[in-house]
Image 1 (tube, one colour):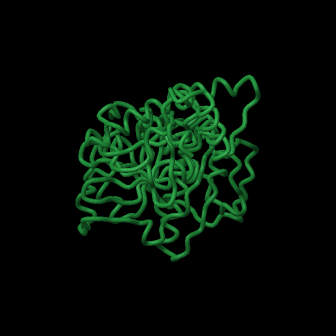
Image 2 (cartoon, rainbow, N blue to C red):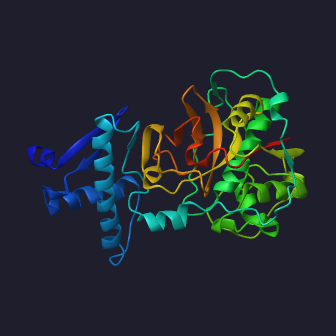
Image 3 (tube, rainbow, N blue to C red):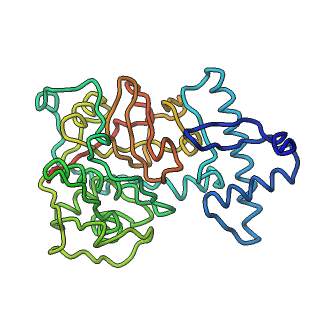
Length: 335
């Protein structure tokens, strides 16, 4: 036990679980032991050729995480990082596999841009959390399929169905991956929120997850209109870079889809706290998430990278800075 403790740099406690970030100078045997534990924890396996490369990436990431968390413990950051299920990816591989939001190929606005949004709604609570009200399904994992756009729009519609029926019905993100190519999306290679909404408007409905389950790969479109359980009647894009519009929309409409800059390595390894990396700029966005509420200081966002990322699959993001471009492009749909 004492020899094991010599390899420990920092112990992060989170409820009943713990993650160990160790000193790489503690010896190859200790490093190998932790590498095997990491692979077992996330059910990862590699052939003899790729294992050393993934291990090297993991070790480099551990150093970044350790340094950041030491600074956070001194009050230099408002959030912590963790060696999550993405910790064996180099930053380049992470960007290639996990952030696939694209721009719409259509420059013409197909939906109503809500210019008079401030006058449509009046009641704005100080805090909103649609998770607690039953609007949000459990955490999903998109895996290495760039389907964030599909999960985000499906999440919006799930919230609208619950709002009308009080029944939470998981909807098929796989249908959106398989069937929206004619509207400018690229399956697992990425897509846009607008293209996805245009597809749904024309297709006439979205099927249930149980009838069209997710498999993290693009396949033949198997959409059957008679089995659709929800149809988009209208959709709208919020005013760009306007966090007040985000607040009004999520408070009155329900969960809404947002675009975000997920490029920084701090985003890749986010664990807990209010994410507020100044390097997470608003110049460009490359990932889609579901905005499910807010507190006085933070937006509450649902991600699609499994429960091991962030706060059980969620992120709290600093408000009133357009941090990571959260207000650059947001949309919602009605059913």
